[in-house]
Length: 526
Ligand code: SF4
Ligand code: SF4
Ligand code: FES
Image (cartoon, rainbow, N blue to C red; front, top):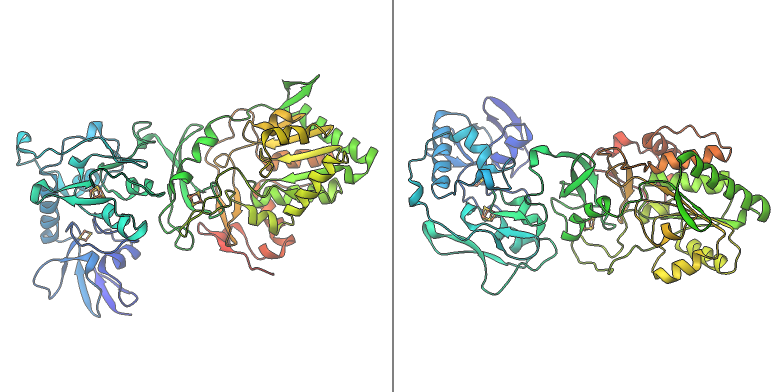
């Protein structure tokens, strides 16, 4: 544990810590391009030069390990001159692209030029070496080789993380160029990360580019709903439109990566949404007020229980729901409707593909939470059988997926239930067959927690208000319970999580505060 001094501040760091990492932990920024915390150290950009006392020359901070008594300076005239020189060298052949570059606003060259550059170019425009622009190199990526600063982050990512090695440097000197091999394209499930790690506008995301300038976007910390891995991410939005999902670092879950399919999850929140409450009258769906839909749903659930017994009412939960929503759904079933007919749909659509990195076969963010809450696949199987036998008179159904049943099978099954109330975000077979549709908020429009496949409870946050007339599921469930005579006093997801942690052993002792932004593991068997 060496002690060292940086810019006059003394600190102690673990053995083996580099100057760059040590500086970062105490809030001192050292400019860098090629360094990435999850890739090997290349030490080729030379932007991280610092002055170390007793060393005759400037050192690169990303590859110099702190030793006992080391004294480092990052803001001396010598350092500044060197960094400015490195930046000028990088910009010699860089195109004057900022006004038409989609990286503008989050570009490492722009940022450092404003801090360390601000020089006039000593190079004539016509002397710049031109390279290939706007190349679709496969996956989610467009390459503009002219903008590349040869930091090699992308090369190392493809060698060390995906181990597919599609990108390499070709040619020499100022003709050096990043490119794919002839006849080959990017072919892995994690290509979107290349746009994140490229510090400039050389690798941009095909799906996002030119959709929105980044300075118009707001961000919220979230969890990917695309599979049970629960990758930490940031959701970027403008108004009530989601524009992109980017990974957020969590070393216990996804390091700094996410898969290509997960990145596209934002589209579901934008498209085919259920936006108004609906009641089916004379076989036709008719838009209705929330009060009318909630009252009608409560009435039909109560009538079924009174006429045919509580067992005639069933609740099918969704592994897309949050822990808080599942807790309330269970509470509603057990304490208000007094039915034991509960279950959850085990799988969402998808190919069930998984790999040995992040992607899991279960394409739900919270199947584990549903299980810990007491919802089972067997329960779902029993409900399906009871429906087929004509024993279910009223059904409260979350989400649009019923395991691996086809659309025709779902339609046929639900036609056997006299009253189906559907709580969900997306239009689909279930909502089209339901007698009451209660539209709910997408993952970006509400807050809560998911429990990932490894049992880690992680928070996702609300970015903006629910679209149209959709409502937070908690509000819907509390509204239903109230109309069924319960006196629930929940006020938002945090109050529900508090009740959940008090009532459910795996979650005991947890709070939103203790979860923080990185989550906390449930204790199995607690
Ligand atoms: S394309 Fe981007 S990440 Fe790859 S070497 Fe060039 S600047 Fe670095
Ligand atoms: S691995 Fe799963 S959780 Fe992670 S980004 Fe992909 S779909 Fe989302
Ligand atoms: S960050 Fe140190 S040399 Fe590039």
